[in-house]
Image 1 (spheres, helix red, strand yellow):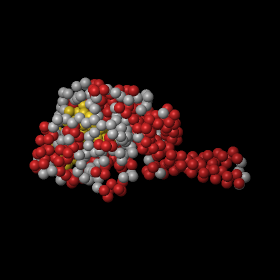
Image 2: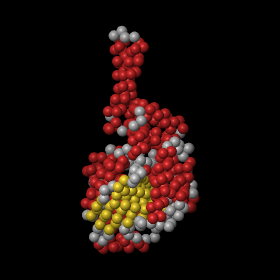
Image 3: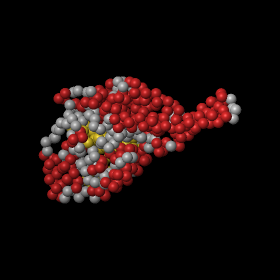
Length: 432
């Protein structure tokens, strides 16, 4: 029952920062985790695979009565993402605008709005901001053209000069404010999501296939007690793709070795699944929904505007598998319960910071704790099914911990049925 060796396969989202910055954040948060629970947690240096597509490190976590060793694999996409961000600005702007209006006129945007109006508003934000910047730049260019006309400059020259000034001002503003607005990054994300949904990014599909084979190899090696594929943000649908494709390569993936668990956190499945062209992706969701050898846990937060809450990744895509359904277990997470009130107020409106809280250390003990999921001895499925016992084991004295283990080892699996996620926060609220 106690996990002594866990293998984490972490699938990042569309984040150009990549390995170096993620590892620094992980190491810093691991120290906070150790202080919170008074544990000894050490971490090795990352080792990059020869092909450069994965990096791995090891975490050793010790308490008075348990010890867990975790191998942490970081699947890398930053080379592909940075290539997107290096594209010419105007190509990115016009391509993203074209895609946005295709979403609107095809009715896909309306489906986004119906599923989660806050996410729909968030993906509209860069276009709204671009419009404001364009109007301001146009106003300056228009005033410049009027000034040239007043000086007796020919109209044709005035128009050309004003147009050039407009492009120069808007381009400069876009570049100089990017670190504050993330506008070009979000537009690139829109383009990538659209093209990935329509299978126009073969280099991504090829890498996903290689990662799927890697998962198969790890499971067959059987060295871990538990394998957890973690997909954060856009990594949620990438992680689901990896697990589904691994199942197609090996139908006994979760049967002949360690338990395989898919953990999706801060997910945004509809940005791929709502496209008519994404039938293959929806078929993969259907496969995961009924697969008995795979546990799928989907964690969502109302406060995170970059994930869909509340959203059922299966029923929300119109997938009906009847009584055969067993995945996912949907777990609402309240960030105000894992962060101290004073600190929570400081960043509650910083959307990217809130989004990353899923993979950062808690400030208060809680059943949802990313680093306890990664480093603790309780298997993930049991942790989510019996959060009270998992929390008691982490925070209680020796007697309480022993009682918690007895509960976990003798518990009958919980099956909960719910349609309103908001009423059931923060415990697990659906298992098929």
